[in-house]
Length: 150
Ligand SMILES: CC(C)(COP(=O)(O)OP(=O)(O)OC[C@H]1O[C@@H](n2cnc3c(N)ncnc32)[C@H](O)[C@@H]1OP(=O)(O)O)[C@@H](O)C(=O)NCCC(=O)NCCS
Image (cartoon, rainbow, N blue to C red; front, side, top):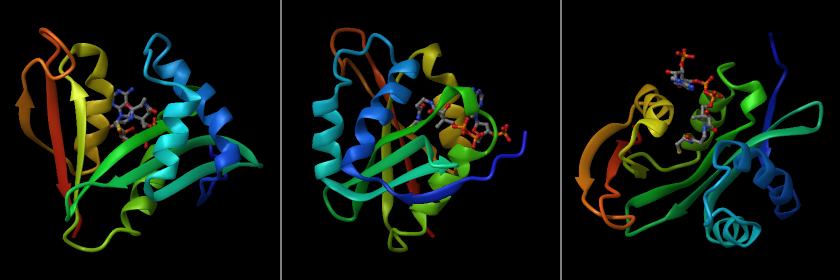
């Protein structure tokens, strides 16, 4: 399947649709709500959407952390359109908006369910940069990934 997609700025009015896309990936995560997305969108350094024929297929939100670090706050692609290069297109477009030398960070829970996410980050050039024990509660460890933009 060859999809004609366009990357554009993510708007506040996209967030309800983006939430539905994200909920398919994270059906039982209590933190994932419209308020969460609005807060992230509000703090965004870069926010982009990917669409095809005006249908929203995914989005990315990056926020500023302690300089020069930035956080990949949300990166999600409609599961029905997975593995067609949309995530890579959205991520690489986003990265071009960041100054050279910026370090992008992301935390993933250290469990098998997040293996595809880890594969994606590694494919985008991230490295495993450390582990944080009990970060999301008892025995809920996370792995930190980082990438320096060149
Ligand atoms: C991770 C995610 C963004 C990937 O989007 P996508 O459009 O399917 O990704 P792409 O088609 O551009 O894939 C790029 C590479 O990522 C890796 N990858 C993506 N999905 C994968 C999966 N399900 N299993 C294994 N590797 C995967 C592969 O290396 C892939 O390259 P390849 O297809 O040439 O092997 C999407 O699955 C998603 O929204 N997941 C839930 C949220 C998330 O994990 N976000 C990323 C962490 S911030």
